[in-house]
Image (cartoon, rainbow, N blue to C red; front, side):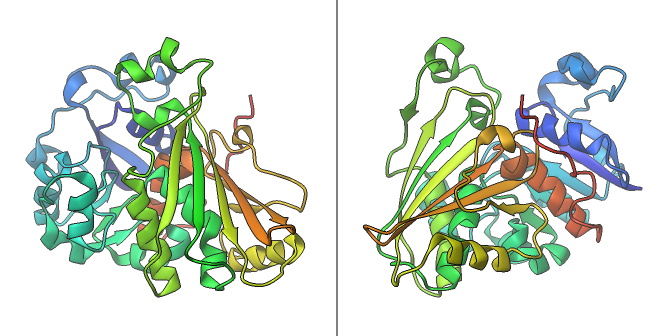
Length: 346
């Protein structure tokens, strides 16, 4: 068994990782860290885990917890990781980080979009971007893996085959995406309270959302040139799930069936990518609770425009599920180990 520690275990991402790993056949959760619930059983914080996983939450003592695990998953706010990760690196631990700190190749891009100084630029050399479908080989040996954001995961995988095969005009890409409220984390801020969210649908951070830069970085790497996108996130009145709608102008005439075959070939070795048949479109209820991404493709022949729709669980493939997929790769296990569960549907 491989011992894994989870730091920030009582947030929504952290507890989803606990839920997935407690039943993983090759992983042992050896420590859970939560500064807000030190000394309490994690099953008292989340009663659904009673008699399933009753480990007591520890304080963040690097010397103490580093003796208990070889790999750590950090589910901490952006910037906070700089107080933790360098210490774990010095102790030769491997890390899967959920902040934005290790998602970027260029420090200046991170600092521009996150409005803060990067506290660990020297560690970028030993890090990899944790999107398995695009960076599988780098993930295998990286000491630090920056787990992607949920919006970038949903958007990048949705459009990657078109960019890689140079089938679209790169100057006019539009992405509209909607996320469940859990994407904001476990917080009590007014905009995420029940009465503010229910029976409401709204856009936010229009043209300024920091995940825009993450999407642009990965698409630019695929294209071999700088790519800019127009990205608009929305908050949907649901707990979990994400749907991205991507619009791009085709550079030549292609049918939906041709593009579907191209997508299936592109992702033929990717277990968690499901390309839907022509005429079938993704729905969030089909992926919620799972690590799958469903992708549907429509061609508007009048405008010679392709419309790609992709759906994930923002807590699954958009965060915790993807972290377990990355963990499997780092440990030399089949990627789907512990993740072969269908969506919740209801």
